Length: 328
Ligand code: NAD
Image (tube, rainbow, N blue to C red; front, side, top):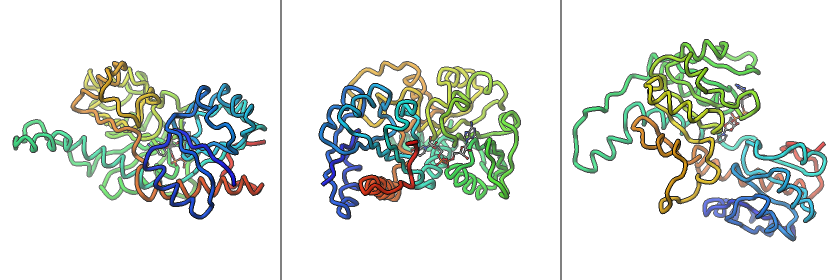
């Protein structure tokens, strides 16, 4: 029986993976620890590891796995920017879940937009205190506004479809535009200049790192809404904070954060938050932070478990893995 060490696991992972594993009968060991150079030894005796978005799969971690003769990393997510591919190449098989529910992420982004615009987060708290005042809760019609979408892959397109239903004009930027689509592509500068709402749906790469920073923010409309459900480092958080303080940015919806790795997914309610930028962002009435939860629907968790175990099954059978990210 093949043994797989799962890292950074939570009760909801276990629920969906145990159910899916009834088909395969793998021996799964669930670790709560994130995978990194120190915890990699926990995988001793396993045939593969399964990792997630905030695991540190850098060179040092890979060396420890290599020593234990573990050469299969099954990512149970779409992104893989946390792996050192220079070292992984030709030694490690890496598979991922390219798509599990673009709708989950797109719908979460829309939820955050509506919440911020119509101040639902504040209304909810007020009413619970029998405060039925509407002062300060004025929003705007999304209908008729211009939405800029950066990245028109699976999630970006799902987000665009929903935006169209609201009666918005959608402008998009993607270095690899979808051919034969009715998506209205423009240059990035035009998107920055014309959009009332900007939503990020591109991966984190060298080119997209800090795509939202002081310089790009200066090109945007006053009061622009910035939405990030992709990867934290697409935004320079300090520049965003300054732009919110200057009222350049009207609101920010952040499901991801540059320095989220040691904080998100954990209960830190009994500790003193050391990240002053995040603390200040969270304190703002026009900022909504969620803990990288946009993917969290039953459908997505079911699909993640299905594809991840299918990838592992292909690896153990020596078959070509359809979701292989790198090997040779
Ligand atoms: P995808 O691969 O289908 O699409 C990504 C698109 O971004 C592609 O069309 C690509 O050409 C484009 N792109 C690449 N570089 C770009 C750049 N510099 N500027 C603009 N566009 C660029 O990916 P997807 O499934 O739509 O996912 C998008 C991102 O969402 C992922 O990379 C991941 O970071 C993030 N994500 C977040 C969650 C969450 O829970 N918050 C869940 C899943 C995915």
